[in-house]
Length: 219
Image (cartoon, rainbow, N blue to C red; front, side, top):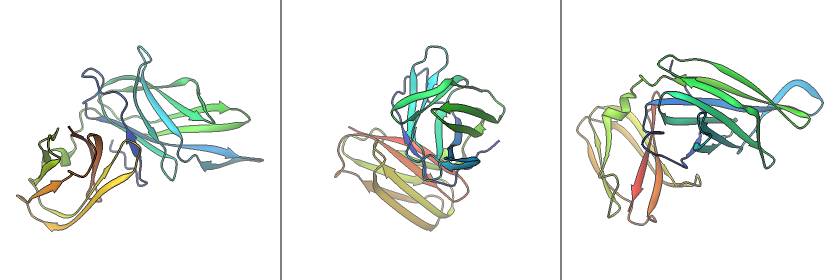
C-alpha cells in the first residue's frame, strides 16, 4: 500500500545506526484532538513532537513534528516492531505507546490516547511495506554524499515534467529550493551548498505523484 501525505511534514532524524535505519519502509499518519465541549469533533494537533522507538529496547530511532494538518511521516525504516509516542504539553504520553509491526504487507492502525481531559487520536493512515522501492530512489542521485566541499552533482536518469527539490536543516527551516520543469533523462546540474554550515540536512524531492526524502551530509 502506498501512503500519500499531501501536507508538508518535517523529518528530524535523531539516530541512524546500521541496524535501525536505512530500510525502505515508511509510516505516515495524522494527529488530532477533541475540541472542548464538542465530543466527536476534532482538530489537528500542529507542530507536536512525534517519536518512533524500537519496541525491543525503547531506544528512539527518529523524531519529527506534525505538519499543518497534523500529518507526520517516518521513512527509511526496516521491518520490525516500533513504538510510536507523541508529546503533548511537555509530556510524552500515549498510554504504553502505539505498537506498530512493519512487514512486507501494508496495514492500518488507529490508536487512542487519553491526554488529560481531551482525547487525542493518532491515526496511522498508511504503512509503506519494506519491499516497496521508491522509483525516485533509482532515478535521482546526489553525489558525492557526504560532501567535503559543499558541492554536489544532481543527476536524473529519467525524464520528468516537473520536479521540486527542497532542502531543510534539522530544525525544519528551508535553506534551499529548486523547481525544474520539462527535464530530460541525463540531466545534470551542479548544486553549490558552500554557504551552508557543516552538518546533516534533509532533501525532499517531489514530482507531484511520488515523493522521496534523503539525508545530505556536509562535512
